Amino acid sequence: MIGKERIKEAQKNFTQYLQDRLIKKEKNETAKAMYAKNADLSLNLAEECMNILKLNCKGNGICESGEYGTSDCPNCDDNNKCSADSYDSASKQCIHTEMKGCVQ
Image (tube, rainbow, N blue to C red):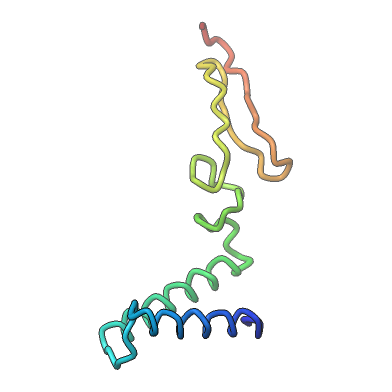
């Protein structure tokens, strides 16, 4: 739910944009359809991310199990070709596992 202060700010901005002729107040079915589609996509992503059965949700800014190598997780590459690098989402730490038999 959007707070009253945020709504008031949005209304003020909208009025200013109209006055500055940055936007026009007219009925535009294409824009309306685009806004509805974007709203649906946002709601679907939110529902997907909130689904407890789905452990990982790429793009939510949280590094979760199974997401190593995505934008949600830190780069744990230690530039050592003899270690397998990963991120442990439980401990929130990079893990560097030595690869036996590897020669530098």
